[in-house]
Length: 193
Image (cartoon, rainbow, N blue to C red; front, side):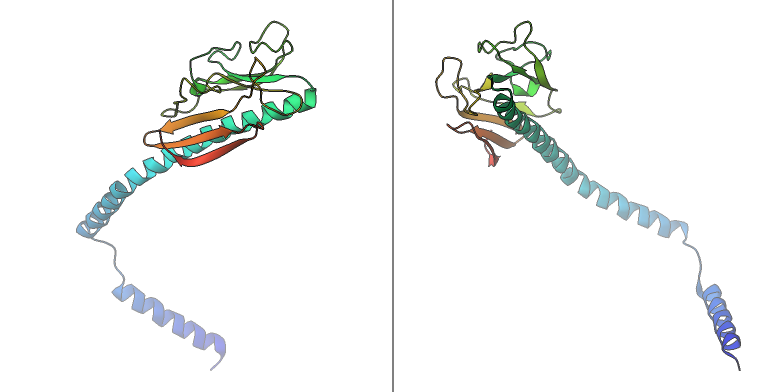
């Protein structure tokens, strides 16, 4: 007997066997599968929302951290003071509103920490996603602005050191951006709100 006849004979026997034993799902079986799927989905939903909150916090922290790095590099590149300040309208600095409202990055030619006419806006930051709030303390020098000199050092408007911590919170989780005395920003995970 040739290979093809043996193969065809074997496959037709398998089809016959499957047709005799194979059948569809009953309505009860289908409802049980749907119920089990619903229970598993309801168990996964709370952990999924925690992942979404964590991702929002991580994205917001990364965005502000990148903006601080950009401020430093632009000051070095432009050989001028460059300032990053809180701003909801993305046109003028607005002290006291928090970093979660947004920010502007501008070339601060006269070094007064306020965007005046003719000072170029380098970049703007949009408001942070829902649930992420800046809880930086009133006593922190970086509460309203971060400013860098052409040397890459962060300095207050009066010339003093500008260092501190910006805290971003989402529910019970927090991340901090710590700006050192040299002006280098770093992110601290698992901080407290």
